[in-house]
Length: 336
Image (cartoon, rainbow, N blue to C red; front, top):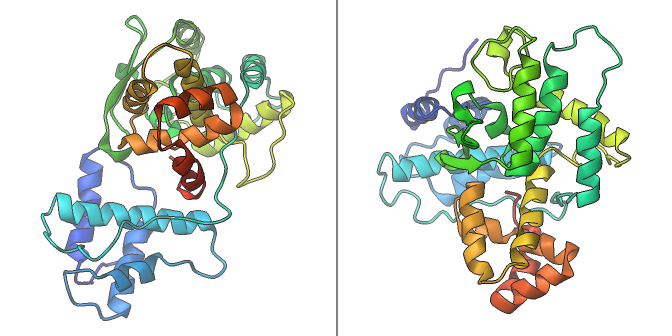
């Protein structure tokens, strides 16, 4: 039975969900909006102007819940607030509400793979075998190595990769069109020669499977037009890590598939810092390539690079005055 929204902002909540859907963004946690609607009703809130207390009350930590659940609630409500201001024009509605952030002393520290570890992961991905045939997706062994290489070679988010349609990948030109991206930030990324070769291999091997022709990474099943689930891919990724001799420390501790994006950024910063020129200009290019909303999101990777590559840190410090402050502050920022 579906929940009927009846709060003062019920129409706005429904309009926001429709707005996201029309933009091609899938909302997996719509119950957050229903819970917020119920929260407003329970607290007898009757003003279109949301104040700090009502927002922070809903977003506050709840005993026994996972930190990831709170993070999702905060991110979802932040998006709704931005929509009311920037799209609906609710001018002045949130003047007293600061940007809601998710901070915790237990914040996940990304795992940055070494270049040697990446080589082992790619080797194991290309030689990966599944020891059982029952319920195995027809195209999974072709997908796994190509997705992993795409994540590392482009720094794309996992959702961006899995949402790629057939027409979004132009192998001849070496271009990937990202149309469903975080922050509505559509962009184009280029392929390296090695990734182009892997894409060609994947397409050739996938011809043996009956595909829907919708998603580029098609699992070979009619369900959801062949779209591969994150959880299944993560399951295989963990097995590949084990085969590569890389310890997985358990759920919530990684390494995660998203860490391939962090690794791409750190390895790219290392290479860029070895080039002549102003490192700040290179960071701007990298920011655009990654689809970050602001330059500061890309700068957060500097503290990771500082830990891993001393030579890179020295070069960055030479050009960037904010390195010391950023190094201290970034450990408490939410991951990008």
